[in-house]
Length: 101
Image 1 (cartoon, rainbow, N blue to C red):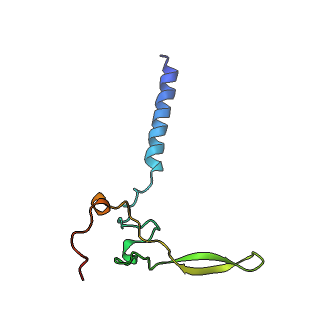
Image 2 (tube, helix red, strand yellow):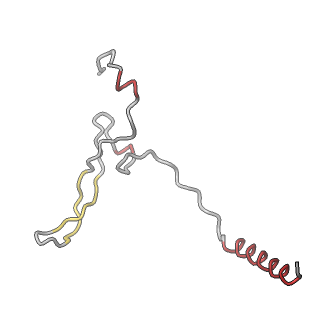
Image 3 (cartoon, one colour):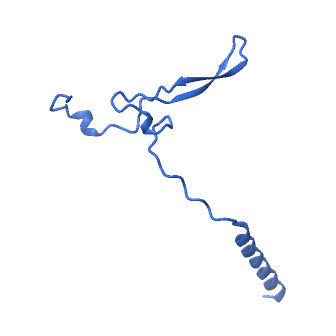
């Protein structure tokens, strides 16, 4: 190899190394703690455990009679806390005991 291409390669390697070291900036912040979410995006603490209804409210756009945007309205979330498929024993095996108090 000729000395010019070696020098150009070394210069490119050095420039790439410096750009990588200087371009990183500060280290990335730690990710926020993971909270269990429902399919609607709300935390599971906003759901009733017995009826599985969601207590959160959603902001929806409202329109007047002419179809023009007139602001926002708050409506209750309609999800039913679906967090995954039911276990197979709940599907095929009937309950042995009646539900307790």
